[in-house]
Length: 320
Length: 286
Image (cartoon, rainbow over all chains, first blue to last red; front, top):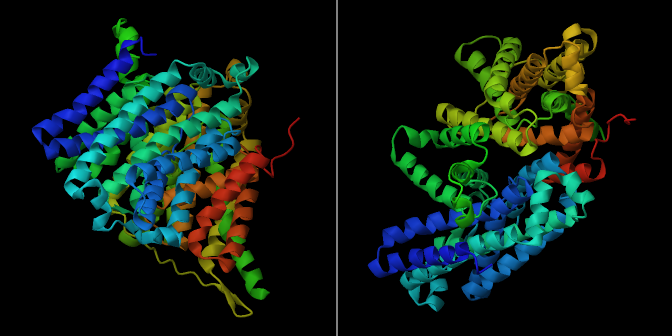
């Protein structure tokens, strides 16, 4: 995979995103990039489901939220170091997703989509009723939780570098899967599940595996993000709206491509920022996101990258 | 004992309305293989329709029922041509996304119009008291209306020429087209009917319970549970499934806090999907 140009481009871009705000000491730029990076993590991992396997996951945000909860809980109650807590959160959430996926992914297509809508609500209610995690009011991190990283100021920079690293990993994972036998199996499932099964793709297993794989990095990202926020509560952690925005980002950028979702996430984040600051549009954010999604689905189902690939053929070799 | 019987009976009444809502979902799914994720938002618009007509205009509450049916039908046909027609026959992902986009827009517009605070439409209807338990009049009226509307739908689908044409399109679109049925119009009609059912069930629910613009989510989940219980694409099964869900809810609320209900419903939903993919009450298919 390292003989292709794209992984190097990804690493270069990540390095740039990490170093430029650090050298210029631009905190505002860092916060903007951090938010965009979180969106890229969500969109890129969701793309493994939507773009490759053709399975929509309306509850993708629960990975992010659960990862955040586990990690914040470990840091605040058991005083684990942040990286260990975040990695354990990733492993735990992914294991739960695998178990759950083996059961639920026997469901085909639309039935699975219906189940994922319900699961978002069910997990939020479960956590709201779960007292060790603070119930409805959530968990607050004490100020001294930032001490092991050298105080709050330095902790923010460290979290930022870690988030950028997770973002780069997300894109590399997406690239690696797309160019593997596993990825080919997923794409076959996305195009025709019956035909894929006939040709020997173990479809329930592959679906469960990709469901689980799409959970690891968002869970780690959630752990980092909520550590930085210092507070986690059910409404913010399992916000169905964010799940949906991630879907819009994937569709906007181009499902089934490696950099499409990242592009979509960056574009959507810019667009949202512009809409939020305008008086008229701030109330209609959801309406505009919905209209955008509808237009893409009806008229350019390949998204931005699909559109570019169709027009400019040479981009297919460089930007997958 | 009587207390449990009373809550069971009330559950059945409310369940009939859930069944009506699910019928709209299952009709659209059965006829055109589209899962309408705007279902919950439409239900909520039915609720606010009642609020607008009864509270703001001062009309009698139940006059909102025919108005919801007519407006829902017109809106449904329009929605079909705008958002659904182009994705008929494309992968399921696309129809899910398109109807979901409609859902987002409706919820967004609703939030801008009415905020997310709760609304309540007081409808006074005398109840029946028996052994110290009162059965609310609005619950009984809603159940009766739900059953009547469901009956009308059944008569339409099975005993009119147009209704038979809709069923023919559901069975085999190509063959229906060859027999001279204008299939696209029939799909639009079926979508309109499905939306009308969602809207009117919202109106009926609003006579019973308070609601917010975000209530649609919960009722949509209920509709899915009912649809899965009754068998996707099976309107008669939806009514039975609705009553079954109402029963379960009626009994469950006596034994556990209200906030656990969505978890029970979701668990039931997944279990049903896994154990009975065609629905518990679905007729055995040859």
